[in-house]
Length: 335
Image 1: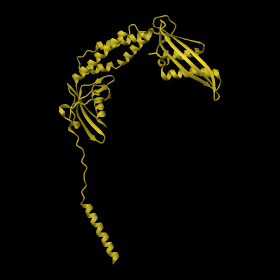
Image 2: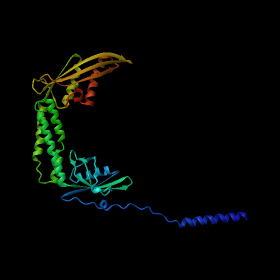
Image 3: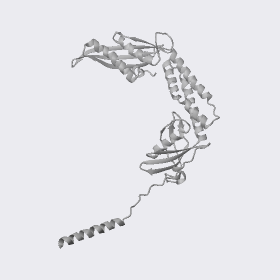
Image 4: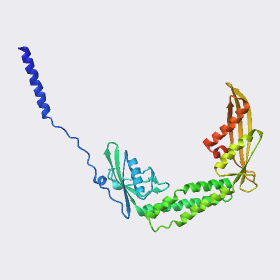
């Protein structure tokens, strides 16, 4: 009898909890409603550029939006973010305010500035979205101002190079070429923003710098001299200079430079290896005998086959050092 009663209690209990469970309603997790500006962002027009960007945070979203904005002008972009936020009209809601930014986005040396952050909102799951706007005229004006400033600075520096030695002049024009290597892309952008813009004078200035660099490179020459201990070290230096398209020859011309190598080598032994410890001095002088570059190296050659082979190993190690550090650093030159 007791067993039947226990069974009935168990059955009633199971049915009760089953009924309670059936009465529970499933709770739906509300999904976030995407803002209208995200779903249908405004399109760029004749006066303004718009770009929507996404990222794991606001900074990354802005960088991606700038990428998209620049790509709409047919240029690839890499962005760096350095923003200073100014709240407009006392509003503190970061998703609604309009901000002034000091962001500089590098489009292969092209800077995108004077834009507005119209919207910014977290979409959850480490996803952020922003909407940017840039006025085409303001963007063009900022690019033009920067272009003029860059050429003005180059012109001022060029004047200081008149009495400099050939290597300093070569270094200046090499750096000038590097700073202008993406000028054609900048001018393309500016022509897209303002079809009436005439870029001829800027292209001519860039060409003049390229010509001056090539002329200097053609006229510069080096001769390499050494003491008895350093004869084998001349070849690595000559190879490194030649790789820079610099001529190796004897000359008395104004644009000629003389390189002097001196070495002190000591013999030593360690764990069955023969060692050649060298103290190497490299000095470069211009045609007037003025030192324009120098360096001191400590290279240890080693071999299990004797001291002579260890001395030859110094040459191998100098070659490796030039390949790793570059001939300019090894010789203490700015080339």
